[in-house]
Image 1: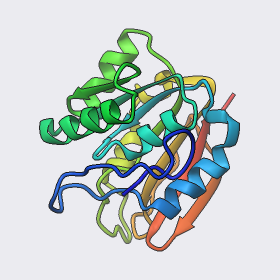
Image 2: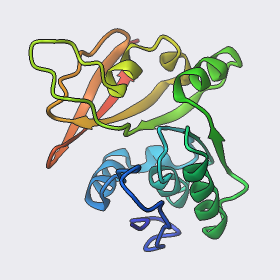
Image 3: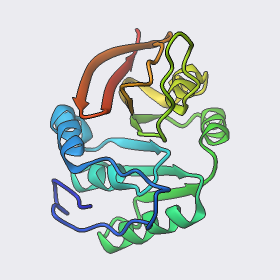
Image 4: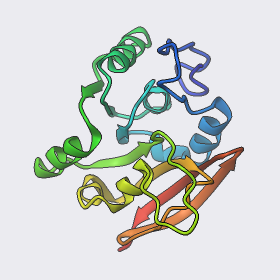
Length: 191
C-alpha cells in the first residue's frame, strides 16, 4: 500500500499483518481524491475507523492542514503514528485510540468541526428485506456526526454494495463512486 498523490506520493506505508484491516485500494483512493480536488488543501480532516490511516496520510500528502484519526485498535493506531512520523506529518496527525461512537460524542460536545470526514468502516452483511445494522448505517444514524462537519464540508462513506443503506436527514448524497464491491458515497448536510 502506498500514498498515491501529493508531496509524499509513492511512499510505501507499513500496515498491520492479518485480516484485521481492509485497506482502501489505491485505485479507489485515487478516485476519491480526484473527485475531492482542491477541497483537501487546507482542510481539517477526521478519519473514522482509520485502520491503516492511509486515507488520512493521503489527505496530508495532498495539502490538508491537520488530521485526526479515530481507531479502536492500539496496534493499528501505532502503525498510523509511525507512518505519519516517517512521512514528516507526525506534528499534524493525531491518532486517538478509541471507539468511534463515544469519540464522536466527545468531539461534538467540545464543538470540534472538520471540513472532511472520511470513513471506510468494516463492511456489513447483506441486508435483503431488513434495515442495515452495519457501521456505515450506524454512522448515518448517529446524531453527533452532522455536528462535526462544517456547513460546506463533505462526508465520504465507504461500504459494500451488498449493504443497502438508508440515507437519513440531514444527509444528502452528492456523488457515488463504484469500484468492484466497494461504494464510496460523497455526502453533505442539507442546508
